[in-house]
Image (cartoon, rainbow, N blue to C red; front, side, top):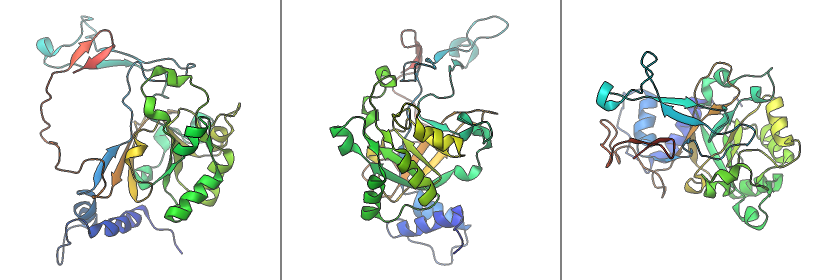
Length: 307
């Protein structure tokens, strides 16, 4: 059997949702993907799986924190301001491309494989699988997901789809943004056998986890195997307690830094319209966006703008 193209996969998911979305029009002449949007995606629930980047978020101590500041006019060395110039901009000094919720391309560990700007555009939308190891982590904080955990998920939900994204829910991020998370040991992860099973037996696109490393071995053997063999992974994923274990999609975005070996990422889960978390199109002002209760202002203590 031929593999389904991503558009076909998306259309099949949409058809599963049509029954609880708007009824299809008779002889609908709209382009098929617009019908998918109107029939399934517009009424879906959207959940952000991404941590905001600030100067104080957890980071591996070998990298160090970021620094934010106002952008200055190079001629006068004075910051641009809303009052004086009608706009403001921000200068980011980012100590690494491994901050917050991130996407690791294989070039992070192996220069022979693609960098962040070389990842295919087909990464954009995929079926989302969420495997929970929360109960095991509650008993053993350094628990590493096993093949048995994957098989248990499949007994409950059916076989993991080829080309999907698998996120491991561990509860590790419940203490985010405590900077101490960057050095807390032990932390939950995934065994090498588990990540190899996902890629070699289920042929997923990539896996992701809440922690900032893949596993707790001295050599980071799971991460090393993934990245040295052409696979990608996500780290620092958030809000996995707000998405279903099966049946959602994930939208994947990241900046296209030339030759980048890491990427600040944005992951959005698209959940069924009757899901208990998230927001749907039309529930919040979008265009124009609503004014906020308080204006942004610079907080010198926090080193960033706040409301």
